[in-house]
Image: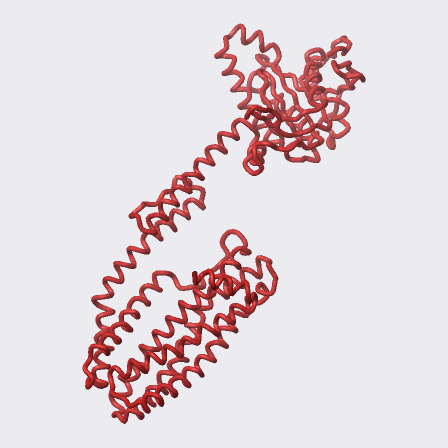
Length: 518
C-alpha cells in the first residue's frame, strides 16, 4: 500500500517529487531526536524544564544539520533533472538512474563528519553543562549516547531514501539502454546487512537497558549499556548476523552465476533450489525460465532446419501468418539430370543418401551468397534471392551461387552427377500459404514458373546454367561473359523468352534444336 502511495505521489508531483520526498523524509530526524531525549530521561532524572531545554537545543542543532543535508541531497539529484523534465534519451536516463540510485550512499559519504560536528559534539557539550556533570567521563558517555541516536537517524534516512526514490528509479530504468552500462553506485546487500544488523542490535540494546535500569542508574549505566550492547553486537550477535547473511546471499550469488552463464549463451545453466522461501521460489522460477529459453532455442534450431533461418526469425517474432509482400527477386531452380534412372538403379535408400549429400553441399552455398533454399522438390530445389531479406544485387548473388554450385558439384561428383540450373528475375509475392493448421513460406508468381521452365531448357542446350534476359539486365558484374541461346518458347508464356548461358558453364557446342514448347 505504501509503495502504491509513493507511485501515486510521483505521478502527482512529477519532476518535483524527488526533492519533495527528500524534504519530507528528512523531517523524521526531529522525531528521532525527540526519542533520543526520552531515552536520556530513562537513564538520568531530569526535570520538565531541563527536558524542554534539552529538546529545543537538540532540535535546533538537528535543524541546522537537516537543512544542510537536504540541500546536499537535492544537489546530488541534479543530474536527474533533464530526464525528470522530459528528456527520455538513454544518456539522460542513465545519468538520472545513477544519480537516484547513488543518492543514499553519496549522502552517507558526505555526512561522515558533518553530523558529528553539527550534532554530536555541540549536543554532548550542552548536555554535560545542563546536567552539571563532570566533563570526564560524562562528555564521552553522553557523546556515545548521542552517537547511537545519530546512527539510528543515519540508517533511517539511508533506507528511507532508497524506498522513497524507488518509483522514480523504476521509471528511469525503463529508459535505460540494454546491456551493461550502469556502474556500481549503491551499497551491496552484504554490506547493508553487515552494518545494519549490529546497528539495530546496539540501538535496541541501549533502549532495553534504559527501560530496565533503575531510576537512579545515572550516566554510568548509560555508558555501560552502550559498551555492553556494542560488545554483544560484534560478538554473539555477529555470528548470527553472518549466518543470516550467508543464508540470504548464497542463493543470490547462485542466481548471479547462473545469469552470467545464460548471458554467455549457456542455456544448460541451473541453480540449486535450497528451500521454499522467497529465494528458493526465485531459484525455481529462474530454472523454469531458462528451461523455457532452452526449449525455445531447440525449437528455433529445429525450425531453422526446415525453413530458412531468416524466415524462422520472422515467424517467431510475427507469428505463423506472414502477410504476403511483393518483392523483386531472382529465382534459382535446380534439378538433377537423369536422377529417376539413378534412383531406379540404386534404390530408394541410396537415392535419399545421395540427395542429402548433395543438398549438404548446395545449401551452404546459397546461404553464403544471401539466398535460401525455399523448397525441396524431390531431386529439385527452389532457391530465392531477395526475400524475405531484400537484396539490391539479388541477380548477381543468384548467378554467383549457381556457378559455385556447379563448380563444387563437378569437383565432388565429376561426371557421375550433372545439374541443371535455371535463373529468372521478377516480381513475386512472398508470404505464407496453406490452411488447416499447415502453412509454409514460399514465393508465388510467374517468375517462379519461368525459372522452372528455364531449368528444363538446360536439358536441351546442354548448359549447366541458363538465365533469362530479365536476370541478365539486372546484373552489375560481368561474371565471365555470356553466350546467347536465342529465344525460347516456354509453356504458359505468350512471348518467347531470351536465354543466356554463362561462358564459364556453357556447353561447348550448342545443339541444333529449336527451343520451343519447354
